[in-house]
Image: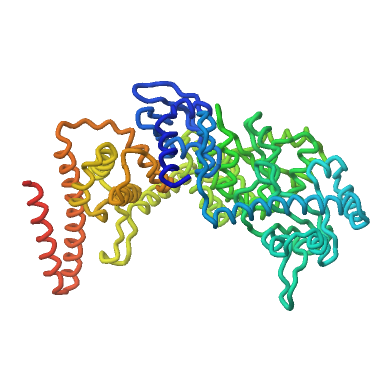
Length: 605
């Protein structure tokens, strides 16, 4: 379909859908006043701060500042593209989707993606056959048996083997009509440097097929059977494979994660396979030690009536523990409920489960520690605190963790324990926490250089300016006749809020192109943060008698704030230059006086 038809269809879906009904499939909502409220599905909370307005068709969470329209919600909670969200909403509403006319580039890309899925599936079957049906796989089978991997496990995960020959897969696939270029794009082959032709990327390795959430093969991980390096080799990034967006085993584990409300994240393929074989099926791997926010979203979007608890069971060596700390920080910032499984004796989950069994591992899961306790334990375990210097080092590591915690009772309990363990007075630790909090607050508001000319003020809009900018946006969204007047009298650069500036710029651009601002199709061009800000704005209850006067009052308020800021900058600069004996202070004084006159004029308008 043409773009105009497509835009009309999107707006029809948005206007005809009952946003409360759609979101209620994911979040229990109760009406309170004009809006509906529930616990946000995007972060852990016990008190509802997630609001939905039926009149405007927006949602907003006052806890994590997530917001948008029904399409934004489906995209975020289902981790899908905008087009897939459109199709999903149309399906929920039983409205057929018109066929959108695709460009030649889009059609080429779709065909290429389909070919990549197919060639990856062929490669999976090739590696599996090499392991289970050829002489090449005999040594590999013996190796897997030695690691406790049964035939059933091999079949379940379609584990395979890449032969040691340089081009066994390449020759087999070229013989079956697969194009060489496709093998390169799939990451199954590598271009030779010295001459034409390609060779197999994976050779003499145990092969683990990697699937997306829909079970489609998107890449591979290959493991050596000796001490060769690299120990693991993953597929390169392709059109269908980006390891930041993939969790190994998630395609089968996600239903078990939803059922028990708990996800266990491990490092390696073998950890997942062994856990699943022993009946612990809510386990996934992060394809190495680098956990990403995108992987976190994969699990968090499974939340429905309660948040998913995420447990990390990375290897207990130093690399694994460092990776755990990074991952915990990522998920804590996303509002997730996280704990850490402490595996004794420097073991990984695979080795521990095979030696001690599933029940022993479940005990470790039950005894998993929270974020704060884990960070404190790490500080003690990685620092020799037998002397004063070591005690100071431990406290310096722990203070930022205590300062970031939001539960005073928990913090007090930990301070008492730390004091006893280090033989340090509690008041000394509390004093360090207070100093950290004071400095942290100071750093957030101002960064001071060597003199006033280098001062960089981290300016945040005043409450009045913030309110004025929000009212301007809300009024333009409801009455497009105001846009021309506002555009003439309000330069975009005077907007202090970054997201609000983005919204106003887009409104001006859409209006200048003759598009309808009253519908919500234009909002899909906004960034996620700007969409959340717009959702909050649409929840504002504005009372006014004279709409034009209100607009002018908002613009006046914003201009006064900007002028006062400029006045302060020139005044400070004049003071500094005068102390330095620099005659240029007279120019700064004159400029500050000029700005002050403008301020006085505005006050009398």
